[in-house]
Length: 294
Image 1 (cartoon, rainbow, N blue to C red):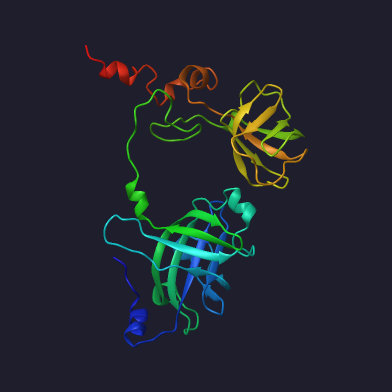
Image 2 (cartoon, rainbow, N blue to C red):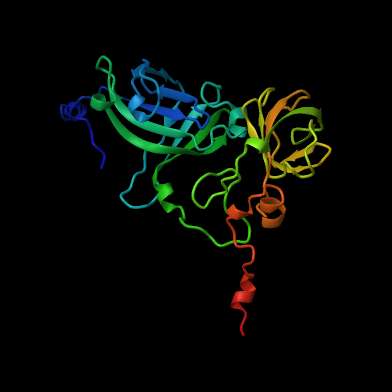
């Protein structure tokens, strides 16, 4: 149940209208963005929200508008749309296309702007919290779907029986891979480029060593971005699953992590020597064998 601070509730009861809305967005790379609908910036201590900033400045964002909040008591998804001008002050198209805004967390709240130094404990009413959903790129605007917390309750829990491994390479914990990535991580350099998806890297890694692995750019136009590898040859030729948004250049430095195609013999045992932690059922009969009439 949502609780409204007593001081803010008293302001509501008195008919006060000195209210403004604000949004705080934290991307998965740690960058924080904060904006207010008021014509003056808001300075707020957000350390109680898990962000190490006792004086975060919420900038005045022109051209930022939101649809009405839909909220129900059932399990229907609560959602909201946020529309902003495509001026690069919040969403940069190249960053959106590169996936930097995927799964970014947000907090939407209302606050009193007529008090000196508003605080979360006394002057803030939470309105919605969740993650960014689909971002639609228009000709002059960007529309962002804000998804509430309820979709998390609609996810399937438990494990599904399958022949390939269910775990992620390097995942630690009970019923996980538990394979160290220290000796599976390598520094490579781009030595030749065909396009944004196909290029050649240095090093003498075995055939398909990076297949289904990850490449993270350390330098160059794509610095900080990560993409999965579709295929890799012993000569160093790499093909990505999706093309990079920005151009790849000779000399770009990358961190490469070995890939796992989740097979018991070829990968878990032969490539990583980790068969004891294989999280699949490779000898399970096919469904048609189980359901076939006797």
